[in-house]
Amino acid sequence: MAIAPPAPAATPVFTELVLDFLAYLELERGLSRNTLEAYRSDLLQYGVHLQRHRLDALTVTHTDLAAFVTGLATGLDGRPAVSGATVQRKVACLRSFYRHMRREGRLDHDPTADVRAPKKSRKLPQVLNRAEIARLLSQPSGTEPAALRDRALLELMYACGLRASEAIGLEVADVDLEAGVLRTRGKGNKERIVPVGRQAVAAVAAYLKRGRPRMVGLGVEPHLFVNCRGAGLTRQGLYKIVQRHARTAGLEDRMSPHTLRHTFATHLLAGGCDLRSVQEMLGHADIATTQIYTHLSAERLKDVYFRAHPRASAGR
Image 1 (cartoon, rainbow, N blue to C red):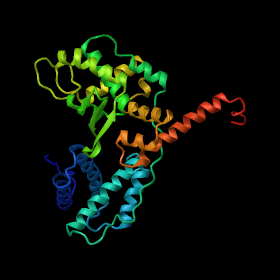
Image 2: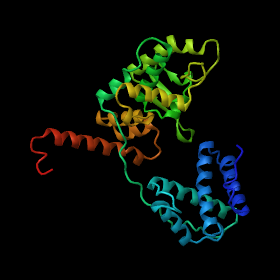
Image 3: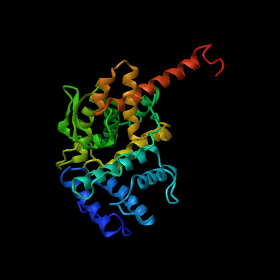
Image 4: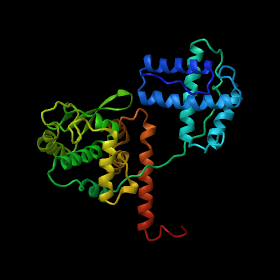
């Protein structure tokens, strides 16, 4: 990957430090292009801040960095404030950057050691109820190849809680319809096995038999989901498919590809599935990430309770 300099305004020393750090992330840690670009963007903003306030990356103090972080959360250099999650990501980038410089002997202290980012606000994800998900999944109709593909794609994403990147990354060999399981690679290239329900199995089988061969023709394409030219489906292509069917189902304002993943997890927990199993099927490294769905299920139960119980709404 050709790494662009962080910013035209950055000092030569800062540019050198950033390029060295990005090269380390790419060559030694093997981070993806998207992750490298996120680090580059965060350091670009930091470099502009250093220039504007006449600070040196090698001599900044804890106070300087704390002021930068506070500025991100409240509005920095005339820019709008960013979310707590974004501030946390940028602080994590700076910590990694300064740890690398200490390892390389450029610094003998860590100016980020006591810097604290604001806590993320817990935002419950959008999910569909059973009637809504049934309405969405019924939208691709007919026997045309694109309709068979769209039905298989939506069914499989909901049946297995797939991320968009996992769905488009699936290869034909990753799906074992006879056993009712698929193999997918998630964040960090970690592989996991996920069960596939009967309706999704049937939809994928119909697509493989009557849809995909007509789309691929005589070409050789390993990816399961393909576009009308027979090439692997892109993230943008998947997004357009989901949005098109969400629109016809009257769910456009509440839908993204990730909504299917949120709905999968919430419906499993509401149906009695244990948290550890849901964590494994989602591919979450930390069970705390999965626990947000327990809060979501509780909120939905409370909503149903207060709407249904004759004495529950008193005083509300």
